[in-house]
Length: 151
Image (cartoon, one colour):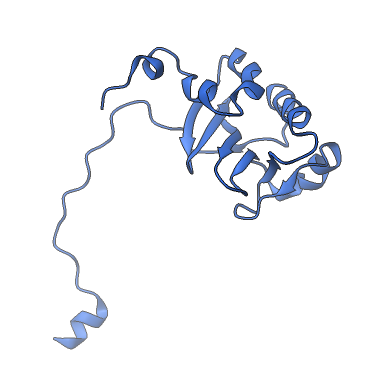
């Protein structure tokens, strides 16, 4: 698949085109920023950690996903009261677009992520930039215990 100039020339094109991309513009100043897609969202990685996800579908996929661990929920929620536990990915927090202080909270999340706040971000397999490995050739399936007993 050949990428159009908007994707091949600008590594942050996905971020810039996203409805919430302007809120995360400061992330593009980070030399380790990698932008990819995951779960139909735009994913932002800093220093090898998945730090924020932008979702623009229906709630709970409409806002900013905050990859974190449950141990950090209370501290982050006390600092940013509009954060809620994501209803599908319960170990992550979520800033819904409908939040009263959505833009201010998003700016604070970016600030925390850029500062390397240990409460934000999870280790994740970074997207590969190289060609994909060829799929394994289908081989003969091994007989299951149940199939073997029937013989």
